[in-house]
Length: 275
Image (tube, rainbow, N blue to C red; front, side):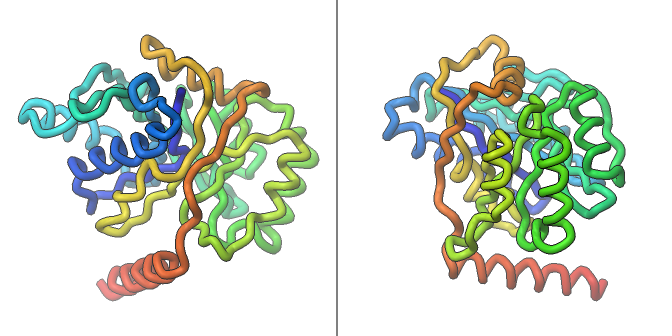
């Protein structure tokens, strides 16, 4: 089986040793009841933000951890091809998939994964998605609090209806682990389901010191035999296939944690604004 956290940010404030421990632990907690903890592949879809390229930092940190014998072991790493690693305390390996978070001219987000070339920000939504697909990438349109409401929500619905997105391989919507339980799912998900567009959930880890603890706890699994020889190629094919059935897992954020995280983020932004 393959277990995927489809929306991960790695922030400089994170303790990366604990980050990887949390990822393996959370994936394992999902896989164990399914009796799949020893024969699966765990996947983190890592979306770098503009000006914050953390994938190289991850690679260097993993090499240091491996040399010190304190963390995961690198099984394979190539520029642009992701990172495959293992952990002595867990049976299944983990794949880190490289990606970028892009902001369109309509101020909508698009996650570009596995693209073979750089995509320029600030294009329209259709232009951005087309650029990702032409670069052999996977495009994920992620939910964000308030970002699919009003004018932007209308743009999303129009795009899904007019472009035939549901019939385009490699385009998915993204659900979000930061969505609180009392916040109903956007009607765009129902709209997309009718159009045939799949949904890839992810934690969307926040720029808060301890938020890495959630990584791997919200996502989807695929009931297939994991290809450990070419995991990135298999993942690209699966996410581009109309027949792939992703089963979501994980719970929406609780009320207390949602309020606490939002207040912490606002306080952090306020402190940065004063500098």
